[in-house]
View 1 (spheres, rainbow, N blue to C red):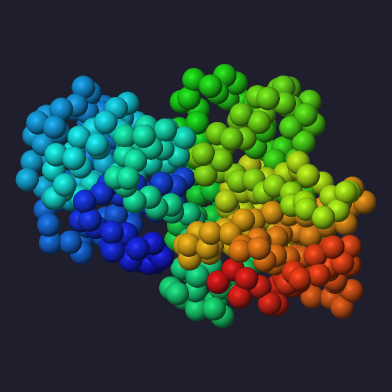
View 2: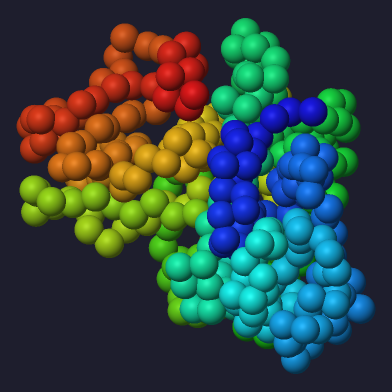
Length: 374
């Protein structure tokens, strides 16, 4: 079984008198991680699946007494897919305030739902963790750097969802199942999603625009939605861990783009499944987009797990001078340009280095990417 980076981090927070929330998209391995964690504990435990109707009913109009009757003498309580319980925030607050010796772990595949329901009731009462598809570091820890380098082209096309990694040879079938049956389940249940068929068209449009600036107006005209609805759908897709945004960086130059954004997928395989594009890299026209999405998403995982609390951007001018990825922390800038092939003509634009002479710069290509993602 491939070990997850946050496993040890969660272990260190157990039985500290606070609720632990574990969020992340469906099928990223939250259940497997927690089952492994339970197996290492000596305290009695109970697993409550909030996808099941009778479990949700037991949390209706909760009292500390009724909740204690539900969990009995168990000291470790897992509430899986907790966002499905209407009053989960109140229930968790009642439990942790009344029975601080009990460790509660609540999982959720929709940050929009779970965080909205728990943020206020659990202020100062929770530790929050986020789980992604396998990261480069997790995969190399399980196999080796050499093997992961050999599998790089495979990762660019099929991604790193656990079921995909663990079903070598059946990647397309698994990805179609994840994208068709699991990934958007929580979104499609929301009242705010009035036209679910438009949501899929939006995702497909975003898949074709990876690496490019995104205009909500242009996408709206393409799929038949107004720009405000497109923006609200993108925000919901972010909260369900399907996509994430990078905003443009601007400080010194008048012609820097100030309010632009790019949208990336958390996983290359999901991106490719949306447009049924699974051919190998050789001959593909979108290698640059796949490479950029892979690097940005892997860097996000790396920084989150390492608790790097800087800001991430891209940079571009109206003259189309650009830097693919920037990080800003403690007043320092690091700029990265992504190129699949290592060529002598690759360079960092002088427009940027002249404007930000104190910044660190690097070109990340397929021969030197390990330190960037690992």
